[in-house]
Amino acid sequence: MSTGNTNTLEQSSRDKDKKNIANSEPSANNNPNANKERKAKFLSGSIMSHIITMTLTSAVGLIAIFSVDFVDFFFLSQLEDTTIQAALGFTGTLLFATTSVGIGFAIASSATVARAVGEENFEKANRLVIHSLIYTGVVSAIIGLVLFFNLTNILSLLGAKEQVLVHARSYLQILVPTMPILAVSMASGACLRALGDPVQALYIYVGGALINAVLDPLMIFTFNLGMDGAAMASAIARLGMFCFSLFGLLIAHKIRTKPNLDKLKQDLKPFSIIAFPAILTNIASPIGNGYVTYALAPFGNSAVAAWAIIARILPLTFAGIFSLSGAVGPIIGQNLGGKRYDRVQRTLYDAIKFNTIYVLIAWGALALLAPTICNIMELKGEAANYVLFYCYWLIPGFGMIGYMFTANAAFNNLSKAHYSTILNWTRATLGTIPFVIIGTYYFGIYGLFSGQIIGGAITALLSLFICQRLVNKLQTKN
Image (cartoon, rainbow, N blue to C red; front, side, top):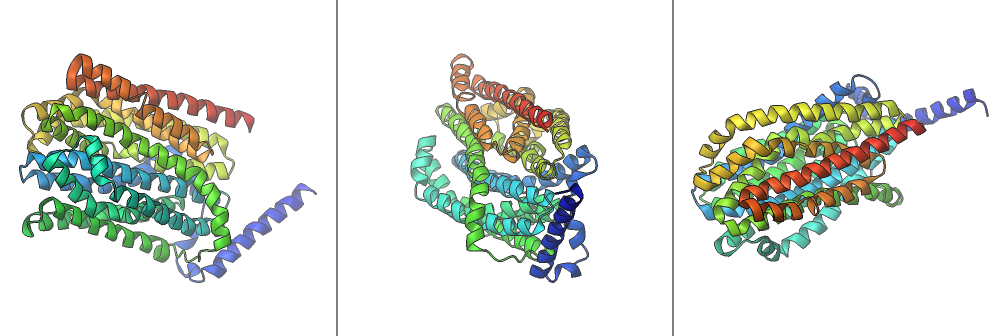
C-alpha cells in the first residue's frame, strides 16, 4: 500500500473519531471553547512555557488541598492544647497517605487520557475520563473502608497514645469516609489537565479550599466542636470539590459518554498498569514519614508538634515541586502519543531547570519566614528550634525530591511505572530508616531530620539518573 493511501486512511479514521464525538456530544459544537480544548496543545510551543503554566496552575490547586489541612492546624492551634497539636501530627501522616492514593489515580487518569489526546482519538479520551473516575471511586472506597476499621491499630502503631490517640481517631473517623470523594475530584482535575485545561482543574481545588476556610472557624469556635468541627469542615469542602469537578467535565467540557461494560473491562488493564504502581509509589512517602513520626514519638509531644508544622509547611511551600509529576505528565504523554520524542527529552531537561530555580527561591523565603511561622503557630522552646533548624539547613535537600517527581512522570508515561514504585519505596525504606537511625544515634532529633533528608536526596538523584538514561535510549531508538 502506498504512503498516500495510508495517510488517507489515517485521516479518515481521525475524521470518523471526530464525527463519533460530535454524535455522542451533540451540544459540543455549540460550545465556543469546544474546538479550542480538543487539541493536543502540548505538541507545539515552548516546553518551558507549558511546564510553568501547568505547574503553577496545578500548584495553586495543590496549595488549596494542602491549605485545608494547614488552616485546620492554624485554627486548632488557637485552642493552645498540645495534645491536639500532637494529634494533628499523626493525622497528617494518614491524611497524606489518603491524598497519595488520590494522586496515584490522578496520575493514571492523566497518563491514559493525555496519550489518547496526543493520538487525536478524542472519543477514546472521553471514554477513558469516565472509566477512570469509576475505577478511582470504587477502589478508593475499598481502601477507605480498610483504613476506617483499622484507625486505632494504625495510630497506635505510629505511636499515638492516650488523649492524643482519642483526638486523632475522632478526627479521622469523620474525614476518612470522604476519601473516595477526594480521589475522584483529584482524578477529575488530572483529566482536565490532560485535556489541556488546567484552569478548569484549578477551580476544583480553590473552590474546596474556600469552603473550608469559611467553615473552619464556624465549626471550631462558633459551634464549639473543636477538632471534630475542623474535620466536618474539611469533609464538606471535599463535597464541594466533587461538585466543581462534575461541572468541569460534564458542563464545561460536555463529556457525557456513558460507561460501557466491555470497554470498561478493556480499559482496566492499561489504567491499572499505571494506577496501582503509582499508588504504591505515592504511598511510599507517607510510609517513610510514618517511620519518622514513630522515631520522633519518644522525644515527646513538642517534637511531634514541630513535625506536624514541618509536614504542613513543606507541601504548601513546595506545591510547585509536588505538582511537577502531575503537570509534566500530560506534556510527556501527549508528545509520546504524537511521537515527538525530542520534546519528551526537552520536557525532562526543562523540568529539572524549573525545579532547581524553584527550590532556591523557596529556601530563601522559608529562611526569612520561619520565625514568623513559629510565632503564628504558637510554637515555643524546643519545638520552635526544631522547625527553625529544618528551614535554615535542610530545605535544599528536601527540594531534590522534585527530581524524583519529574522522573516519576516520565516512568509512568513510558509504561515503566514499576521503576517509580521501586525507587520510591527504596527512598521510604533504605533511604530513610538506616539514615534516621544513624542520625538519631549520633545527633539526636537534629540527626533524625538530617538523616531523612540525606537519604531522600541520594535516592532522588539516582531516580533522575535512571530516568535520563531511559529517555536518551528512547530518543536514540526512534
